[in-house]
Each structure stands twice: as C-alpha cells, then as structure tokens.
Amino acid sequence: MSDGFNALIPRAQQFFTDLKANNTRDWFNERKAFYNDDIRAPGVLFAEIMAEEISRIAHIPMTPKVYRIYRDVRFAKDKSPFNPWLHMIWSDAGADEARPWYFFGIDHDAVYLATGVLGLQKEGLLRYRRMVDRVGDDLTDVIDATGGDVVDYGPEPLKRVPKPFDPDHTHGDLLRRKGLIVQRNVRADHPDGLVKAAVTEVKHLLPFHQMLREHL
Image 1 (tube, rainbow, N blue to C red):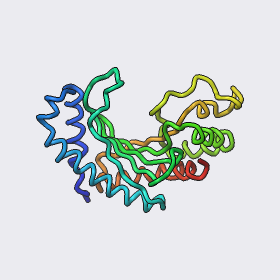
Image 2: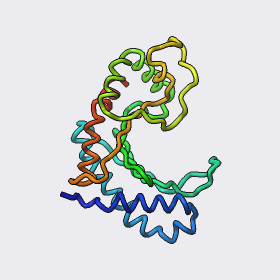
Image 3: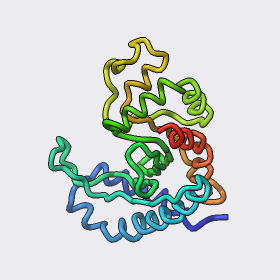
C-alpha cells in the first residue's frame, strides 16, 4: 500500500536533473512554487513522520531538519546558487557532535539513508579514535553486517595515522578519518511506500548507530 510519497522521488529526481543543467536564479525562480509545493513540502512532512519512526526504533527522541536548497557561496569556488538535492537529518536533541545522527537524501540519480558522525573535533575526535583503537574489530564487523558502505562526506582523512597510534595500526584507515558514516541505498519502488523503505534501512543501520552511541 502506498503511503502518499510515491510522486516525491521521481519529481525530485527530474527536478534536480534539470537543475544540474540550469543552476541559475532565473531558472529556479520560474519553478520555485513547484519546488516548494511538490518537493520541499512533502519532504518536510516525510522528515516529521520519519522522526517519529526513528525515535521509536532507536528509543531516542530525534529532531528532524530539512536542509535549504540555497547554497552558501561566500567562500566557495563553485558559485552555483542551488543545491541539486534534498537532504535531511534526524539528530538527538541537545546532543554533542559525537552523537550519531540519521541522514536521508534524494539527488538526481540516487536515494540513500545513512547514519554516523561527521566533522569531529577535539574531544569528540579523541573519543572516536579511542573507540577505533579499543573496539575496532567489533566496529568493522558491525559495519560489514549492515550491508552498507562507508562513505566520504566532510573533511578529508588525514594522510597518516595520528599519534600516538601505531602507524601500522590494524584500523589505520578508520583512525585517519574525522568522522564515520555508513550509507545504504533506499528502495525507491518499495510496494509499501517511501516511509516503509526508509524504515527498513534505519533498521539495517541501527546496530552501527547503537555502537556509536555506546562508545562515543
């Protein structure tokens, strides 16, 4: 049974395909009402529904946030004014940077859901490295069991394993990172609709999310 979000993915993907080829204010402004009514509005509703679902599954109150389509280009080499995707996150209200969040995205050719931590600094980064050093084998086992992929968002990894860890550390690839995110593709044609499809991926990723919460 459909959940009412059937049209969101094809509409969004076609819109973002066209936007990638026409990333100008004039082009967007002519289609702004369509974006707001047919992509962003149902996206916000989906984010609110999924906040309830994730809170129930993870046993943590999660707060949704839908990102704006407008890019901050003040310090960017790419001055394209718009983001050709719909992104949203669900985070533990009031949590610090080392608390994992869930993430969902639709772009021109993919639909995906992820969980993890991103852009860790100072104490959060120290906690992350201690976790990798202490339970790295278990961590990689949990990641493998999700069936997802470790993806590269945010700051680039360090070129070398940070001190005081052994340069040949078994999990040096993880120690060089400043965050850790695991992502799975969402089945866009799920017969029970987008919410059910996304919930399925939340459950696949839950053991990884729980491990991060336990050790960070």
